[in-house]
Image: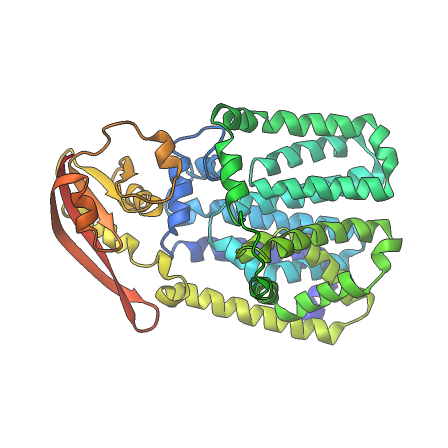
Length: 464
């Protein structure tokens, strides 16, 4: 099968990308939204140049796909388009740096690992981050090694759009600066470098202005997110995070990549390999360092595996590790197929946080009266209500929970008569803010293999 694919590498790569895009679009229509997806979709109905939790690109992209469909598969078109275009530019960059064979191998690696397939499924700020990271990597490579003004200008555009996607995009700035300072200091005297920087700054300026007008609240949240004030050292968290990389990028692919980065010395002598290696190592080292102090989500390192897919492919082809690649690919595909199967048929086990909310909102819909207001016990519960209720009414959070965009939009005296959906019994908590609270319905659903979880629907009125 692989020999057949390598007879026409470019055609095979395009067919793989197209197939995965079509398959994922259909697949995504069978899964309910994750609470975070509903939250970002809610942003797309309130466009602004910044949000408490993240930069605004995810809202902008969902806003555009809303014109096609606001169903689950429509919201997730953001992912499908982002991952597909990223795969295309991974192929283009690999072909530019090496040849068609390495380029196809890069696409096979990228398209087989579970972290990428999770990206095809769940709509998060990582989707536009992966998209624009891939584009920035491609155009910055061309700018640095070929020097065309158009590539410098496109680098500035893509870098700016990446900065509007997720704040970790700042790591790419350090990648570029490290490479330029160590290998190409002549670029610092190139007017095109400064034009690119000005373009990127211009693109991110509305987001910076929004933060400035809101006391830098979003930056402060992200700086505090995943960090600690005590700097207590937790080696077990590092080993947990480190081991997780072998799961999300597949065991053999990760081993080959890490071996190359640690043991090989090619990237010190070859500027192109060094540039690619930096795009991997800077991201990994940053989050490995942070993992000693706080638990890191595995998806944080996702941008590293864009360049990582290309580097791994180069290693397999350079050292003729054909049998090893076939084994690695089989393992990656097996893990990915199992993951996709679990999402589709065992959601209550694989991702129980997504399970049951759609049905709970449908049950709540039966109790709706005219002029009701709708509240959740958490930002994601409130977002689920807005997404799954008829006509998508405005919703809010009634009970104390972590600060979110709802708090920034909220007006005084927002508590009115209506329905509240909670994930735990909240009679006492609601009675602190309402004079009358009635439990009107409950819904039990499976949680994990044997457990259950219960949703509670309350009717509330006469706020205190």
